[in-house]
Each structure stands twice: as structure tokens, then as C-alpha cells.
Image 1 (cartoon, helix red, strand yellow):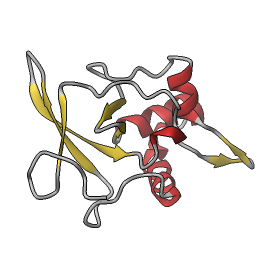
Image 2 (tube, rainbow, N blue to C red):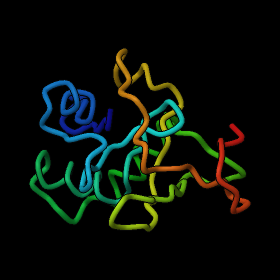
Image 3 (tube, rainbow, N blue to C red):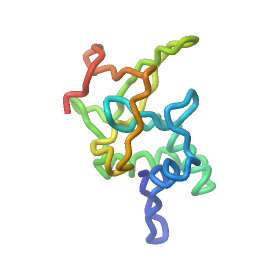
Length: 132
């Protein structure tokens, strides 16, 4: 899913990682979750992991994140690229920030069930569905 052009090639890092289970999904420390029927990429974690494991350059994550944004594969709501989800688990509550993917089929045809401890928070502070 994270596409990065380097030497003319494209790397489908998250798509491949989710398919071969090298990227964990919907787990406590996972960089990818499902919420509201689509994928939620935790930022900056997924970009840092990509840079470390693929580029061997851990400090390039911001550049990779900007390139990802330019693809337009994520949901923008009220001019915002980054979305917030609340985490309400048995032992911990908090928030995560990240990107919602517009078309989850772009990542995988088989979308796992939503992570039951995550709830999308709208930009108005209400919990619910994004307006895009």
C-alpha cells in the first residue's frame, strides 16, 4: 500500500506485508488497523517502519509520508489528512493518529473486521464516520 518510487520501481509495502503477515494488523502495537470498514495506517509508525525495513534510512519517514499523501489514496475530511481514533481497551485508553484509506480493496479484497477497541473521532470531536 505504501508506494515509494526509487530507481524506477514501486514497492507495495503494506499490501505485501499484510498478505504475508509480516505486518501485524489490529493488535496492540500494530501499525495498521481496521476501523469503519477500511484500513487505518498509524502515523508516523507505519512510515518509520517502512523506512527502516525497506530503505534502511530511518530518518526519511517524513518524505515517504508526504509522497503517500500525494497519491490521494487516503480520506481527507474538512481539509485534514490525519484522522484520530480513540482506543478504549480493557486496560488502557488513549488515541492514535493516522490515515484512513479511501478504497480498502486497494489494499486487500478481504478486509478484516473492525478493531473493536477503536472508534473514529470526527474533526468536530464527535465519534462517528468521516464526512468523506
